[in-house]
Image (cartoon, rainbow, N blue to C red; front, side, top):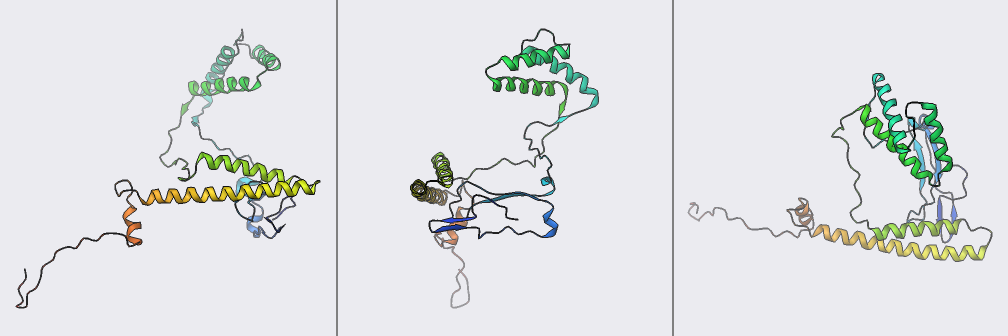
Length: 249
């Protein structure tokens, strides 16, 4: 499934090639799309390969909605239209909120004259959201939804270093007409990559040490790890003793 690209799947100081292949069977072929080599650094000689697979990949639009879900009924359409007109007129200071054509004309004029189109979009989005809240009931969220968990050892410093590393990588890869400049940028990129990997390894080790020093009250798995490392202090339990005559004490 590899496609032609300016980037290669493998890249090191000694050279580059397309040694990594993405192979699929006939059943998966029709649901496979958007194959590409990522420009982000992978902290490896092998570059990141991205693609989409599934029934949603055949040019269908996939929406990821994290906000409230509304129960929309045809009976509430008129109420939504009325609320939307009133809120748009209020936010954009339109004179007539009943005439849709006039309201649309006022909104178009505001868009043409404004210097901050993002603010206009935000106001319109707020009007639509408020209209939905006033017109429709919301669905109850299920308990199965889970929050995204971050990596415990990841820090703001690593985020900054990763952004800088990706910027240096793109700068180096896109320099093609000047071989001397390309070599210079290549050396800077690999130097920064070495620093980034060292910092990431240091953060991982520090986080692991902090984890291992947690008390059993805050981490129930602490005893398991100490037992695996044979670092637990085993207290001797007194049991009954048998005397030579057969009695126990």
